[in-house]
Image (cartoon, rainbow, N blue to C red; front, side):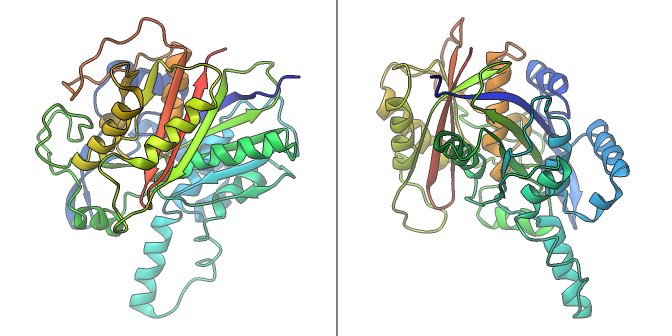
Length: 384
C-alpha cells in the first residue's frame, strides 16, 4: 500500500506574482522585487505586491465584499486558496494555514484607534485572532474538516506541512490544505525589524537584500508579503511531487532572537529529514538564509557540518521576494516545485560565499526554515 504523501496543487500571491506563470517568470528574469516605499513617515525597502497582483486581489475582494473587513494576511490566503486546483477536493479536507504575526495590519489599526478614542469596533477581536486564516478558508471552500492555525515564527509554514503530514499518516484525514500567509509591511512591524539592526538600508544596491553574499558588510534583510498554499493528498493520481520526508528540531537559546553559531537546530532538522528520506542524497537546498550575516553563516555552518564537501546546490529566494516571515517556508516550497516541474531555473545572480556548479538534473530538494525561538524544520520533496 502506498503510504506516501503527495502535493496535488499549489497557488500563491506575493511580490513574485499572483499566478504560477507570473511567479515562474519572476524566477527566470531574476530581478529583485524589492523597492523603496513610503510607509508611515519613512521610506522603507519592502517586497510588496505589484500593481497587477493588487488589481487581481481587489477584483477578488469585490467578488466577495464581506472579505474586505478581514486583515490583509487573511485576504492573501483566501486569494491563494481560490486559485488552488480543487477538482478532487473532499469535503472533509483539513486546513492548517500558519502566520508568524497574523492580523498585523488590523491589529495596528485598532491599537491606533484605541489610543486615540479609547473605544473599539466590535469587529476588533474576531478579525484579529490568528484562527481567521484557516477558518475563513474553510468557510470559503465549504469544508467540514478540521481548521486550525498556528504561529511558530518564521518556520510556521513548514510546521503546517508537519501537521498536515501527521494528520494524513495517522488516518485522521485524507487531504489537507497547508501553507502560510503574512502581511507584515506595516510601520510598527518594520520598526521592530529596524530596532534589531538587521534591516537593509541599501536603497541604491541592485539587490538590497543579498543572502549568502560572498563578502557581506552589513545585515540586509528585507520584509515581503505573500501567501502560498498547497493541497496534500494520500492519493498519487494527478500529483505534482512527493513529500519524501520531514525533520524538525529546537535548540537552547541565549536570548529571544538568538541562534547558535552552527545552527544546531537546523543541523538536527536536516539530519532527521535525511535519515527518514528514501535516498541518501539531495540535489539542492533552498535555505532559510534571510540576509543576516550571523543567520546566513550559522545555516551554512550547519550544512557544512552535515554534508561536508558533498554539499547540495544552495539557494535562497529572499533577494527576490524578501523575507515573508511565517509564509517564507511555503514560498520556498513553491520555488522548489517550480524547479522540479522545470518551470523555473533557480540561481542566485550575484557572487555568493560558496560557488557551485548547478546539477544538470534536480530531482530532490530540501527546504529549510527557522525562526525566533530556534524552531527549525527541513522538508524534502521529490519529483514523480
